[in-house]
Image (cartoon, rainbow, N blue to C red; front, side, top):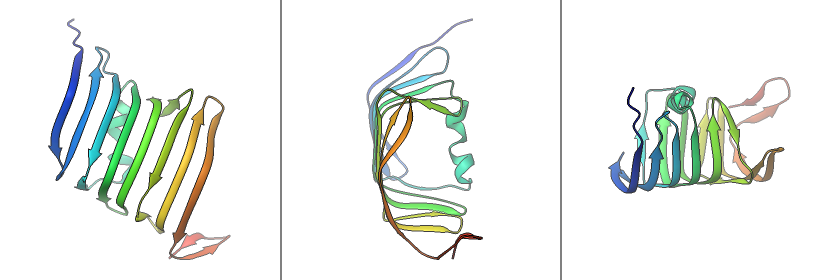
Length: 155
């Protein structure tokens, strides 16, 4: 059996009306090590649910992210959408529906986030990840709808 290792250095591409740049390596076992990846001005519509949209990531044995930056993205699928997304994710490894890190960080903001009946305006999230769990440092947003204990968030 032949094993192939692929290294992408100074990768640049036009994708979904935006740009993608970065450095990454695919190991022979199919796992990825992403040193840095930057996606800017992405405009993407999908016919997939949010769960199905991210399903390909679950098929990779391991995805190690040094730094992921998403700038001004607009993504949309059935029953979900995010506009003007800015996201920074650092020092995270995803493997088999789980994550690992010593000191990972997530910073994210958007103009709108829609998931089913949940409609958030100007959400801002800052979180730190460690072996002990997630420390949510900031979560602010406005939402559309009425909060009800019995029904959750309703439009």
